[in-house]
Structures are given as structure tokens and as C-alpha cells.
Length: 325
Image 1 (cartoon, helix red, strand yellow):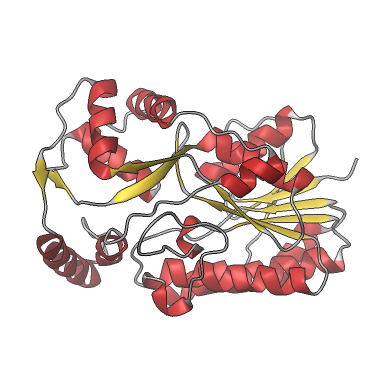
Image 2: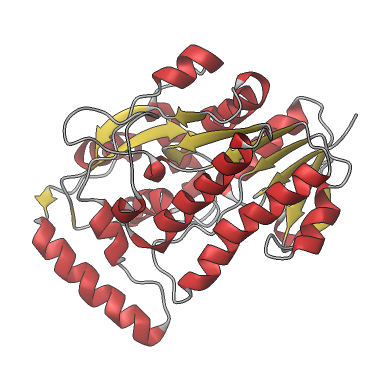
């Protein structure tokens, strides 16, 4: 059996994809920068390397039959946007080149819902047009360009399938992700109010299962949204309040006030180098409700996500048990 290579096994979604592969009995090889960060994945083969280094990427992919490229530099603020583009765009191209040269039979690329167009009315889907100029901040722009790279390879006949997860929540959000940070801030009582915005909340375990289904059943060159429930931030906080036995914030913060706070917080981060409390790019993204439909994944992959409340409950339990709040 040829090994399956995964990038991002030390991250949130990647950890869950790796665990699903191991549960299937697959031989799994993980390309990571730091071996010490690989936890609770017994039986996985670890290869140290860097997506920005073509030689280490070629070594990692050698002999593999399938690649899951889940890794990404995921931040809403960075002092080094060039490095984000090197990791997300150049790193994706490096891995695709290496996989193509190694004769890989299937390549699943993890994009983001941020690359899905959002119509003024209704829900976004895989066919909703989006332009680079609409992408807010280095993260979304770099992921948009990386997705274009994946589509280029698919257009040349390489078997690439793309998945676009929405806002995953659940256990093992170690960093945590920006969505996970919303939960942690709520649990710590450091969230004084909320914006009128919305996210599509999905169980990270369902996202991981969607990756495997995309590998097995997805069509080359196609994108599949891996989503769950469209919820306003107020609804998310209300659900968290019921789960955690805490009071939800009731102050609705005007966008102009949030923008000013984000501007000041991000400017100060540029001086100190510390992560801003309210990244300006995050505030800008919140101006739109990131609401989508996952009908295509349901139809073509048999993708069936569970309720968001269950995922939020598991996330709360994990954060509490691991000392985040």
C-alpha cells in the first residue's frame, strides 16, 4: 500500500483528516516543520520539511499515491505578508509540482470558503463568481491565488480536487483558529459585544470526512463547499451561552466603531509585533455574512454534516478540559 501524504497534520483540520485516514487503516505520512508538534496520531510517519523548500517537498511526496494538502498559514494579521504568500501560494505550487513528478494518483487541496463569492442576496455556492480584488487581506488573497494554482494543474489534467471548508469548530483546535478564538474569548468573558455578521458553522469531524469523500468521489477540477449551518454571530453566542451556562453579550457594536477599534489595534500591533486584539482584516471580513450552501457536496459526495450545536458543545468541552478558559 502506497502511503498517503498529508500536510497540516499539526493544525486543526489537518489533524482530523490525518486521524480519519489512520482510522481507515491507511499508511499516513505527514510533512511538518516541527516533529514535536505531532500529537495523538499514533502510527503516523513524520517527515520534517517545509513547503517553501522544493527539495524537502519532493522527498516527502516520493512514493505516495495520494496527497491531502491541508496546511496553510492562517492568520488575520501578519507583519510578514510576503511569507504568507510564500507558504500558501508558492508552497502549494511546489507540492503540486512534486506530486505530479511523483505520479500521485489523487491530490486534494484544502481551500477556504473565503474564496467563494458572496452574492448581495441569497447564499454563495461554487458557481458564485469571485475576484481577487474582493479578497480582504493577505490570507484570503493568498488562498485565492493558491486555489488558482490548483485549478491550473487540474486544467492540465492532473487529478486535483478542491474542498472549501467554512468555519470548522470542535476538539483539538490547538492554536486556536480565528473561529476557535471567538469561542475562547466568549468562555473567558472577554467579549463585550458582537457585530451583525454571520458564519457557516460546521463540525471539524464532518469537514475531515468531506475531505476523504472528495478524494474518493470528487471530480477533477471541481470545488466542493464543506459547510454546515448558517448562523448569525448573535445566534452562535446564544448557543454557546446555553452550552456553557454563561450569559451571552447583548451589546451590538456598530460597524464603524469596530472598524475604528480594528484600525487602532492593528496599528499598535505593527509597533509591538503582538497579535492585535481586533485585526482590521477580521473586521473587514465581518462586514459580509459568510453564508453558503453545500448542496453540491451533498449531491456528489454524499456529504451530510451534523448539527452545529453538537460541534460547539464538543469545542467548549475540549477548550475547558485543556485549560484555555
